[in-house]
Image 1 (cartoon, rainbow, N blue to C red):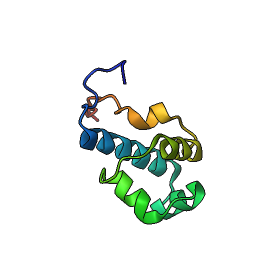
Image 2 (cartoon, rainbow, N blue to C red):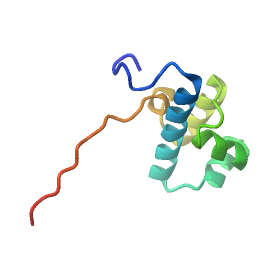
Image 3 (cartoon, helix red, strand yellow):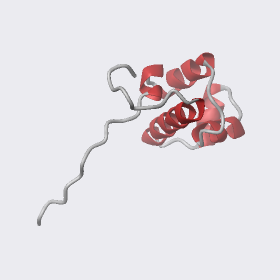
Length: 91
């Protein structure tokens, strides 16, 4: 967060969107569905879906619960990934 100013805004909706993307990114990296994550974290599938869409903001407790379930940290969920430029290799 503080390492990359501007990675997310102070607006609650923008912050919720960044957290939702973090949850989605980590869930997909594990190959889990939203239902699988919800069951493992003790949440409803609808809640996880709305969280990932940025419609809801996670409380600190829920963010911690999700990060532990996903094997990451709360910080991993709230930081937008660094943008990288992909280049095609001639081949």
